[in-house]
Image 1 (cartoon, rainbow, N blue to C red):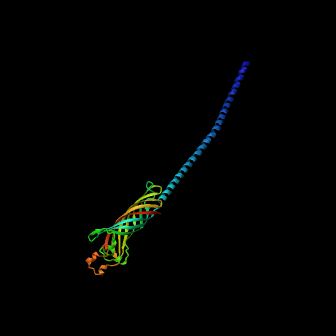
Image 2 (cartoon, rainbow, N blue to C red):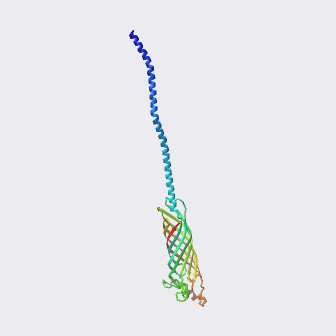
Image 3 (cartoon, rainbow, N blue to C red):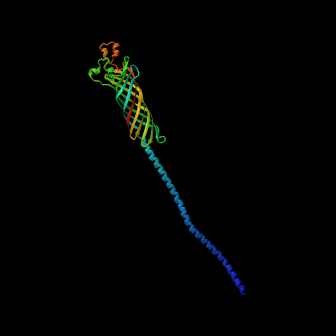
Length: 315
């Protein structure tokens, strides 16, 4: 009986223990889940916060990079403007023109002294330089004045030619080489031969900026020209078109250059003193050789060529 009773009690206890074990396991499992949730949730939150912080940091870096790019572009634009901003120029230089008569008696003159002054401006055809260094432009100006003192170098007179170093041009203008008295002999004053030109200029140019503020330029100019020649009592005026081609090198406001000038000018001659030979009764045959006229004609053409070297101030 005791064994049967003991068996019943154990069975009853086992039956009661099984629900308790199940509930205990559920409680433990729930507790474990809560612990896992408690432990993992801060880590997940930190990771999320880090993701949120990384996104604004990347955006800030991108914005800073964009600002730096814009600043660099603005600085480059400013440098380009500083380099190419000097468009006006004043040129002052010396020239060595050679003159030759192309009609009538052959005459050639050499320069005893000559200088010129020119003012102009360059208008570029595009704002930004090609390849960062090349610009095309148009040069133009309304002031170009040249003064030259000339001396006769060679003459072919009455079928004879040679170099006249002593009397030169004055013998033809003031009298004739044979010794007749002219104005310079009467007054004792020899004014010499003076030539003054006034010109405009316009033409294309190409400029290259290879380094820093250094600019090299090549150009071609067309120069409509009004010219005058004064020699004692003779005055001649004329109009023509000269050409000029040259190169220059500029650094900031200072430029050095050289150019060649060539062309022809047609002149008309006037005489302030009149024809003294006719007043004294010379016949026309003799007076032709003894004329006070420079070229024995009222119209003549001179061909000019020479080199001009200059310093320019760029504004």
